[in-house]
Length: 503
Image (cartoon, rainbow, N blue to C red; front, side, top):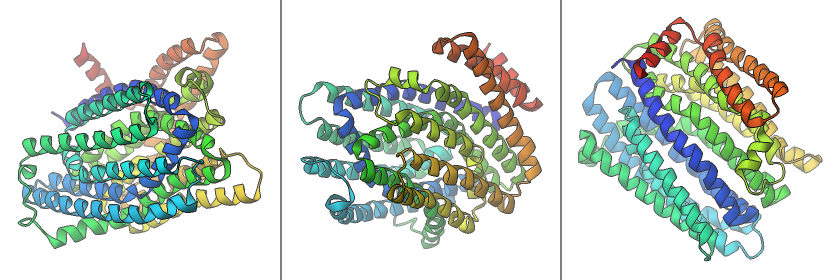
């Protein structure tokens, strides 16, 4: 099977997962908001943010593990794959133990002045914190197995386990809605159990499927140089991911401090809606990332660069396909989705979705930079762009009379726009990107159909005021607009071949 066909096949598996996740995720959030109420839903988000803030450690090592495994796959070096996998197991178990120690100490400060916990909810917040810490430990120790699945481009199993994950979470939400016990505590406990079961399923599958996972020989394969190489790479990558996570958690803490948990509920809905839609473009990136790294590992640099350009364009197009109608019809969508729409939710959703759309133009460049591996200067620059919006937001809320949605405006300006320019600049320096190629292969073919689609939706809305009809007709028009304005000759032939294959 050709690389392009393999990417298409894997992307289709991931889209099937996303469709199920989207449908059930929408109802899960609605049910949770109804079951917990705005205050408890906001409390879970702000306490959960305090745990996920430190998840950058796991995320940075996850990126490093997948990068080294995919690179070794590209080289065709089976012994190196086994060494990297076994040492990744060691690293992640050590990290899990460190996280328990760090969070145990950090909890003292979180619940003594940092977090604005409603009266009578302190003991509940502590239990949630412990359950989320347990979930985080399971999430850390599953990383080497997920990296192995991704390195082998096995998106079928990844999609199946993802569908099971979202179905179980939907079942938990329904259970919480109808039981009369302390719903918030029950939800946190069940989510911790779900994380454990997910980890065991992935571990058992990898041990049966891949030879390097069947018998973990940690002592025999212990390699100081491999650990140093992986942790050094992860350390620099950590600066980018850490500041991104701190900034995300910082938004919740800052808004919680100045506006309370009701504003956190609006932020929670906005980030979930944006995350659900971003999953569409993230699926394509997940399918193509191992190919980008393997191409670099196999000394096929020009091939890696072409896949990176194509990823930037399609990432923007796929996200825009859902974000344009979502922005235009945000109010009826939220009213249909949620029983109660928290204040500021609509404008927060619009701002965050727009900033995420801008970000899609350059996000895949990060994968190309990671494949080459020279990330020191890049991570320092990205870290500055990540952390500045929170500092600016604190100053604005402290000394100005502004609304909570300004935190997303600052986020979009610095993290998406300025951060995107940083991606382009370092891709130019490190992986050979040319501004001419980026303009002709990414920017123009992505922006042109987006603008034409916006105009199409506007004209359709003038003809028919029913928002559901406008979504349907506008979506069909957008498909043809993207085909005409965004695809080159080779991509059009691939699409036509795929349609003939389906017939």
